[in-house]
Image 1 (cartoon, rainbow over the protein chains, first blue to last red):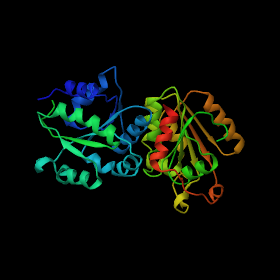
Image 2: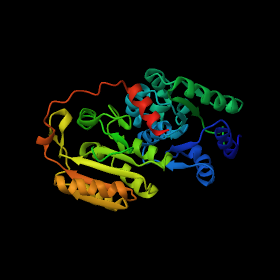
Image 3: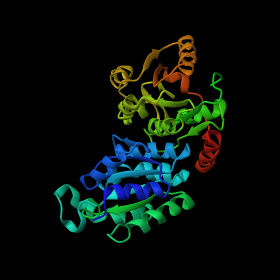
Image 4: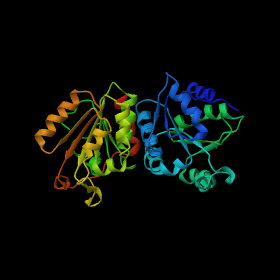
Length: 163
Length: 176
């Protein structure tokens, strides 16, 4: 399993320098790592759309932001993504944990687990899914994609990929 | 607006953006045309990332009530360069003056609980001028609640004519 410390380092090495989001158990260690590091800032947001707003402000002030959230938060920040990021062309990397994958999860995760990819397709936000072998490649590619295309990109993270 | 120099201003959507654009359009203004509620979050992101510049959030009561969580976030992070001005007319003026609930809820008390460093409520032009001068000169995060009558917003206002991308590009040039 990929270590959360290495995952955080990979994001930082690739140029990401502003982190915000709302926790999920899948990224619990990652958020703890980001919070503890003295060289970067992780801003705990009260809600996912707020995180997207804060990240958008940070981008305009010169940062390249990452927003961490559970896929349940995608619903919460849909209006921010569609009426802020996509029309102003404000990029951010969305690291979205994929709860409810293949229907194996608590009931509240099953609907979003089934539709989160389709939802991103409908909104027009490109997305990829981490597997144990593509972590460095996806993070590296994501920076290039969001800074060139100036729009959000979602990387979906299932349980068991990072520790 | 005449008191402003190079301060960055993030304007809430609706009449607040349109009126600011009409009265004094400047590259340091970010007009949020959608994403209602998030002006306070966008402003916070700018303030945290650019501590050398004063950032003013020009919010409305409807916007703030939609994103009350932005208050404790600013209060807990304590960005000294953040000034949160709320124009409170107690209605959703942009959609035809439907009442909000700010006639019964004391928004400045919520800001106080949220640990803003300086909180003031003003009701007259004279107080407003004095307080804007004060918060521009002092450290924040400051919260200024400006009680206004809905009549003051009844003038015909055009929409912001810049495209969202233009608004962003010139705001970014003004910051960096």
